[in-house]
Image (cartoon, rainbow, N blue to C red):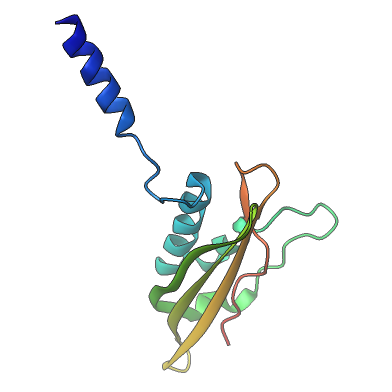
Length: 129
């Protein structure tokens, strides 16, 4: 009986793997959260994913209320560039509500970390024009 409990404990801990494969787990969650923010239209929250800079406050465009995202799809998943630098590409379809014109942009995302635990978007969020 004792061996059976030990075997069950070993098997259940062995099954706890990183759902993102080779991608650092915290980066995977961060990139997913960014995609969710865009998909659900909380576009002002995109600016939270950048690295904080005390010398330069974040400037959030005032016209984001005029953008309605209709699709956010990954064209290329997270790919390692260097140990603490990864990239990802998304295709975003959106409508400028005052013009009712469907547009599309390609969002090349670069993610970096100093410690492998906290990941930031290195480049600015996409601009919706």
